[in-house]
Picture 1 (spheres, helix red, strand yellow):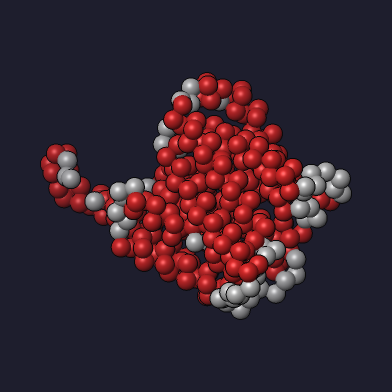
Picture 2 (tube, helix red, strand yellow):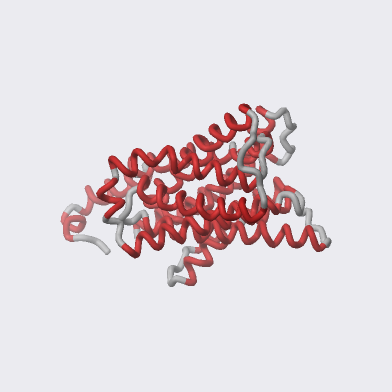
Length: 316
């Protein structure tokens, strides 16, 4: 729709529109920069978990529990009014998002011990596909570029991880858990985008992580996962994991999903796979797969298509 102001300044408006299309709005550039930091943060997750001598569920619990501890002063002092006035609907949605995040951690991490890492990684990163499908079910019609970009980005993950499906019952169960983890992450991103329309990042993240922490604590107690008795080195790695993957990773994702939308955000998360491979090469001395670099290029190309679709939709 063209406004009266635009019609009255047709030449100037057209020039301004062209300039705006050529150069993203500063807020979008800021969000993309923060998203890049977030992806770098969550890319550290897998290498850190691999190097941390603690049960997988316990690691998931502590990264969320420590994040809640870090956010508590901000939430209860600087954001107390917003926290008290969050409203029933937003509170329930934030709690639901936290529950889905707990499901994501709770089913994906065990899958790594049941099926191949390649299969688990490829299946859990189906998040943008489920995000797009859920948006379609809610009545939103994603542009063709979103579907194309999502498919291309996922192809990049497959190029990196390969197809390594086993027909053993244990491996199939692990594959199913990883797939469920991808679905849960899609719901987490979508609910987060809805809550973030009216609720700040700190308040939403605090409620979400607190819910995740409680549910993961229950899972640890039920499964008998040890929550203490770790070495100083393990506690240090848990702290680093909290700062990088949780506070800088997930919290910045919660920050940018409001402006970039769930499609761009969930597609960008696919960059975690090659990012983790490259970090493991630099830190753990693991040789990165030959496919890491072309896979990264394909994922970036797919993400570019999704971003272009979002900009075209806003322009329309």
